Image (cartoon, rainbow, N blue to C red; front, side, top):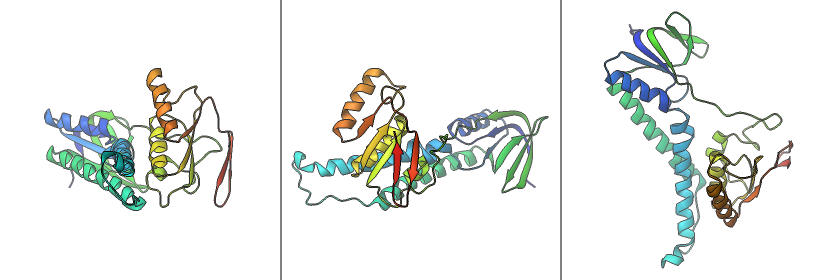
Length: 252
């Protein structure tokens, strides 16, 4: 029978949770970790890591397209979107396996499912409406991360209106793309899709792109992206979308 009594139960196996779990185990505590989706969290599986893999492919494509300036002749440069996506996903899978190995190495018990605080040092774990375990612990660490927010009237449908996850695993290459928001995530997608040939427009409600970054960096980045061919609209709102069979019309 699986032991369900621990010194610490960590809810959430992202970069905050799994690091806390491993460190606690290194200090001699008996640790369990609960994760309902992906070991490694959003950053490893659907964020920082796989987006950088996509951007690396885009960078290699740009280098190949300008190989002649390096004295190298490449007759025809093309890309395979499916293989680009597959490479990105395989890198995430490889790193996720590494995190799982570290948890196992440090004897951290992993429970797959949704963890809920049940009071009195209890954590319940359930999956697909079925209880997986009742855990007892002296301490609980909440490392539940964050989730993307849908804007009213702009909800993704996975077809013509994408979430960040949809944008990371496209089945086909869009001819044109409107990106709402110019933070790090929006700008990464803008750069990737523009490098692969899509017409890209970025809409930002603030008066500059990358609004949480240094103002000078923001200005230089805008110039660089506009040279790349990205259209940028600042101090602008998307008021609504008209969805059709093969296109979306946005009111900005």
